[in-house]
Image 1 (cartoon, rainbow, N blue to C red):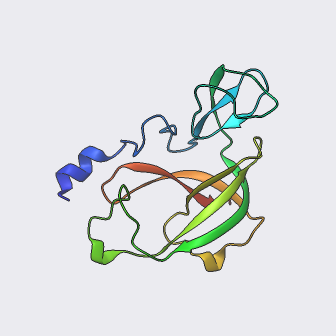
Image 2: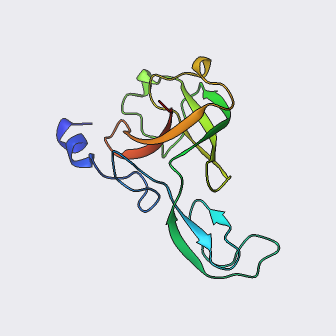
Image 3: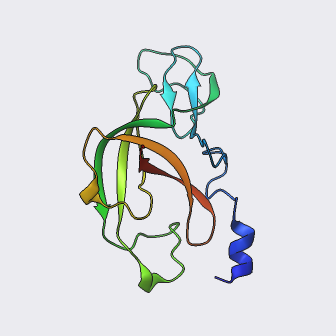
Length: 147
């Protein structure tokens, strides 16, 4: 990809409306059922999936930025689209984390920041949401071990 195209993509989210673009304190954007308080990510429309609720109204809410590492794995293969890899020969395995959000107690999957492999992860670690660019410059959320 040319430097011009990559520069134009900076600050552009890979998925519109899924997370805030606050580089210091990003949040995933979910919904909360106004009837029972159940949280959803990605955002939910229609009817509440909680079997004890008949709610059909949701409010958009920023989700917790932190949580505990519940599980993790290594993605040791070239993933399919829409994952962007400018140079397919330059693929580097990466870690994927399942993080239980602090307030919502729901599990959200995401890639772990570049340079952090599975050998440095263990269940129960405190994790923090951050933004990191993909190869095309578009931003996505990732998890990093909290300081």
